Amino acid sequence: MSLTSSSVASRASIPNTRWLRIIPPILITCIISYMDRVNIAFAMPGGMDDELGISASMAGLAGGIFFIGYLFLQVPGGKLAVYGNGKRFIGWSLLAWAVISVLTGMATNQYQLLGLRFLLGVSEGGMLPVVLTMIGNWFPDSERGRANAIVIMFVPIAGILTAPLSGWIITSWDWRMLFFVEGGLSLVVMALWCFTISNRPQEAKWISEAEKNYLIKTLHDEQLQIKGKNTRKASLRQVMREPVMWRLIMVNFFYQTGIYGYTLWLPTILKGLTNGNIEQVGWLAILPYVGAIFGMFIFSSLSDATGRRKLFVALPLAGFAICMALSVLLKAHIWWSYAALVGCGVFIQSAAGVFWSIPPRLFNAEVAGGARGVINALGNLGGFCGPYMVGVLIAEFSKDAGVYSLAISLAIASVLALTLPARCDAPQKGAA
Image (cartoon, rainbow, N blue to C red; front, side, top):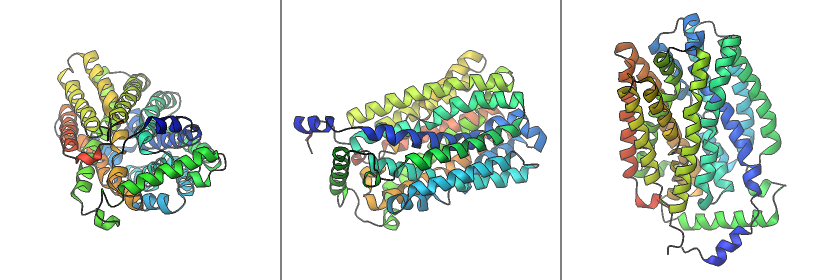
């Protein structure tokens, strides 16, 4: 379907209030969830491992068991966002995050920690499919790559905030206070969420008629184009039989293995590389996440401008793999190795916004929410494998072996992304 100059002019005249009213509360909520998820990465070298008697392999298990719990609410969360009230679901989730964070700060042994990390995974499990479905409810395909990228920017923003905040809190007080403070932040964000967000344009009171009508019509037209064209069946169970579904899951699995292996071990790697204290490590950990913001903007903008989805998933994954390997190869030169770790940061989330713009092109609205949940749930098992694999390899061999395993995983994800079908790519602007 071609995009005429008159349709471009018409779209340009539509208000864009949705970018200011929908994106910020979703972004802030995701930031809090990620801070709760990765603060253990700083707590471990900040005294938790010594106080609770945690070995390297147990630390990897504690980091990864979150993703076993993460499985449980993925599909229900995605379906709820399509058919029910995603806003209410996230509100209750925020309350659960606050309670579990405070209880983690009170843990007295490694088994309590494992149980609480598992429960945190359960309580966060439905978040991403819910918020991605909300983005799908509010942003047409031509905007979705950028909208997804801004929301998924919660990863680098949370990293920028968590690194120095965690280092400062642990240095000034202890690792327990870190969990208490972040539990309180979850309660503050819960109030913000409840008073600002709307599930879909039809429910929002603040939206203009022009913007509402534009969104309803455009999103409806997109579904008419997708229905019966990109999927043969309407049920999630039948979609699970599609080979492309499993390729998406495998790309996400190897991607998440690299992401969380890097994220949860970065403070420990930096501490070993520089021999700095935890506060210094916190400041050094900022720069990779600053780079991530630029990488996400660049790759999502290029993907939206060209309509190329597969390519702009595969390229950042390949860059991430190369930088991961270089961080080990250059370890004799501290600052060159650190530069490679910063390079990892540039690529770490660059593929994510583009990747999550692919499922709505392959699956109709009735199954897209559940499909996202399945892709995220099974893919995020890589979030268990990455930290645990690195922990075991560190214990049995060396940090180098752990980092190389992450580079291999990311290279596999890059190759798999290139095998996705051509219909993953959006029609280029001006093309027939």
